[in-house]
Length: 400
Image (tube, rainbow, N blue to C red):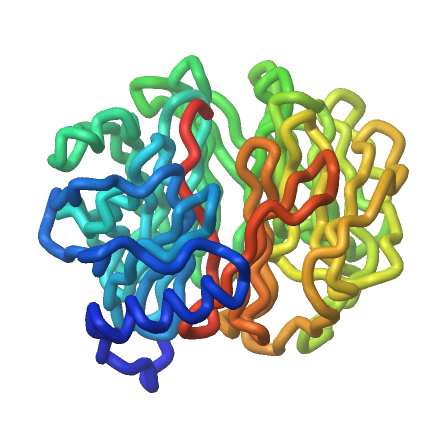
């Protein structure tokens, strides 16, 4: 983790002045409401809750913004390298910290007392009304109903511990089956499926370097491999082979509106950092992979899906590329930020795409800006300049 992160936070006065200045420059409101400095006591809720909050990390903390106006509601000091993911309801965000997963009440601008401790907290997956946490340092999987977070206490839920700790991921299906990856610190090989009683019902170890997951229409679930994708559907595994001997698909984005998954695509196993220009479209019905060349590179924080299943990719050309997943045609490009290049260190900031409903949120750390863009029209709905550069970007997402 980055040991140079500072522990000091903005005072309420400095934050209000900074917010007023930047929002006025961007044509927003005059600033955050009085007393908007975020609270850090469990279950604290201010008089005016933040509407549909968006959460961005910065070096040493979290910014909480109004999802419509992008007004900066407040900040929370939180040292270390932090990651953020939707918790699965309309109030909370899961924060991956140095010591484990913590739950942020984003509407109330407060870290709750709900924690899932463990070394190297990793993937957070939402599907079929359940949220699943995977802790890489222990191999532990924890499943809960995000609706239970509103009570302020740690939800009761299912737990499972992998045979060996590894950088993994898990997802619970609507009928209670649990798909979880297989591997150890040396290598990762595939996935298994457990029933409600944790009895193994399926296994496939033909997925070298397994990483990431996504779910498509018909509850087809895929995990990425170094030679394609492993698909689990209707009780069995199917392999979608990459067109190259080494064709790594490590990050995917799915939509219930489409049987086709969006993935990255890398072909150089020896690269210090490969900057690919092609993305993959994985048809879970046919187990076929189509490659689409965007003419620009992208990063692992560039993939998302639109409200109608559109495949969205934030390119280093600064545009959001909107792809028809059925045909692979790039239907349009939406100008979002300036040109950028992916840094060598994966923890370093880079423009990031977060999509909720019909709105694409795009950050530009170099300019300290964040934009809300209507996906259909391509129009920028709101913009804000923040006191510090941001890194990760997420928000509340309900109804998954």
